[in-house]
Image (cartoon, rainbow over all chains, first blue to last red; front, side):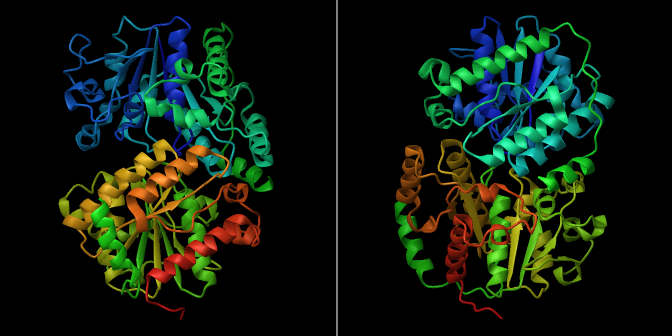
Length: 273
Length: 273
């Protein structure tokens, strides 16, 4: 079983869209997949059709001694299984303050025997839920729009992952950057794409998500592009990304060397751009 | 809702009588242009001769990074609002060309853990009310709904909700609207009804027209007439400065933000000093 977190400290970079389509395409590739919404604001839950999820039927029950697959609510969607988020996650933040509170998710998720892949959607703020997700994960995907602020945010996220890997979760692989909302008409996109590739090399996925109106639209119906517009740019891009990712996850190669760099250094490069 | 908005329009067509307005930029959804709007609105206000202060309340400090502020001591950051000083006048600021800034620090996240008492939402209000020399104070918030965001809303006279006319962003904006109503009702009666500012509007996208129409139908005068068109310069960080005015004063972005600032100034009965 592999757990994949989708994470970026900058909002609006396509985390939720990426989580939904990654889960759907993993599922379509024949793997039993579970997606968990860990964003207290519940954008993913809303998009797949859970507007006001009940607290007892939400991801909140994964945090604590009561967590148990027997009693855990799991919704069976058309394409993948899903545990929604709830507003109650915000209130519960106050109670999750002990240093060991970052381990809850790992504890329960590793006892699962049913799923081959789990996709965790996180919120853009760095909360105990995001840390729980990173601690429980094998892989992290950082969706990033090739523009100034999103790139800064994604580099912060990369740092956070390195920190988590060093201190809390040695099993965490180096994060992958996934370029999203890429617009071939924009020079700036080419430039920041090149910048990321230069600095992070093979940690930037070769396939990327092109800008696609149906990606911000189709979700109105609570479905994924794979069922509504299987021939759209969005569906094709996500299918390719998933294939690439599966290849990387299963490649039996030596782990890639960690790319050493400091934020100071990259900012200098960003200034030059 | 429609009755409310009609009442409100009569109310705001006459100007709001506040001499030193505090404006918060807020949307629970990330990536909608909060930071970009803060910087460009502040620059436009500064260029029009208003003494303007920007407070960065986002622990991830995107605004401070965008402006490339020098690193300051922690007690000189936004943290100073929470217990170290009694009045905004005592808080040191970083002076800029067109506006001054109180930068942010990642330690704000740690501070959040201590802001648990119900009275902890009044820190910023007290500091600001105890005196300052600015005509406009702009507060940039994080995308999450935290005690910090509440502090900003409680201290404010006006809220601007930047919103991309797309599904998720509109949902986030409507949640933010609800939050503002709650704050108006129970914590800060002097807050006027929030304004929506449409950002990243792309006339080539039918969806944008649809959601724009939806917001205007539902919220009427609460949607600012001037909207911000999509402009790659707005996603850039120029070598001369962070605002679009410093990159290219004749650009679409500069025109849109100048008009939008004009519309905001018009809401208040004040003249440049």
